[in-house]
Image (cartoon, rainbow, N blue to C red):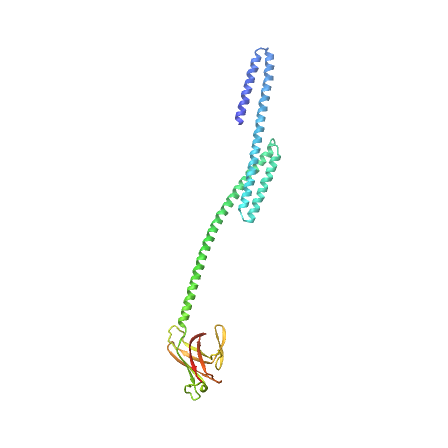
Length: 309
C-alpha cells in the first residue's frame, strides 16, 4: 500500500512539473525561474503531505493490528487457565492474562504518532507472544502426561478389579474346599444304642427298675479326620425336653448346653467303640429317652429307647 501511495504522489509531482515548464515558456526567464521555484515548493509540499498522511494511516492500521493481537493473547491465556488444574500454574496464567490486558489498555491510550511508545508496546507484544508459546508447550505437555497417567490409572484399576475378583473367587473356592474338608473330617457315630440299666447292671425292661443308661456307639473310621484325644459328650433327653442327670455344660453353636455324660477318647482314625454311662439320680418315668452324641462342637450321632411302666 505504501508503494502504491508513493507512486501516485510521484506521478502527481511529475504532472505539476510539466505544467510548470509549460507556463514558463510564456514568461520571461526571470519570471520562469520564479514560477519554477514556487511550483517546485508546492509540489514538494503536496508530496510530503501525502506521504505523511500515508504514514499516519499505516501507523493506525499497525496499532489496530497490535490491539487485535493483545486481545487474542489475553484470550488464549484465559483459555489455558481454564484447562489446567495446577493452582500455581493457573495463578501464573491469570497474571499473564492481566498483563496482556494492561498493555492493551495502554496501547489504546497512546497516540499513533507516539513512535517511542508504539515501539515499546510492540516489543512488549513480542515478549507476551513468546511467553504464551512457552505456556502452551507446558500445558500441552501436562495434558499429555495427564492422559498417560489417566490411562495408567484406569489400567491399574482394571487390573486391581480383576485381581480382586480373582481373589474373591479364590477365597470362595478356598472356603468351599475348607467346608468340604471340614465335612469330610467330621466324626460320625454309628450303631448308637441306648440301654436302660438296673442296679445290678443288667438291662431293665420297666421304667421303675432303671437306675441308669449305657449309651454305646462306634466312632467310624475316617482317614481325613484329625487324630488324637477327643472329648465326647452324651446329652440324654426326656420326652419333655429336659436333660437326664445334668453333669456339666459345653459349647455348641456358640451356646452353652448341658450334657449327661462326658468321656475323653483317643481317636486314631479307625473304628472306635465307645460306651458312656448316665447315672439316673431321679425316678425314671415311662416314655422315650433320646441320646445325642457330640464331639468337636458337632452332633455326630443319636439314638433312643422307649420305656414301659
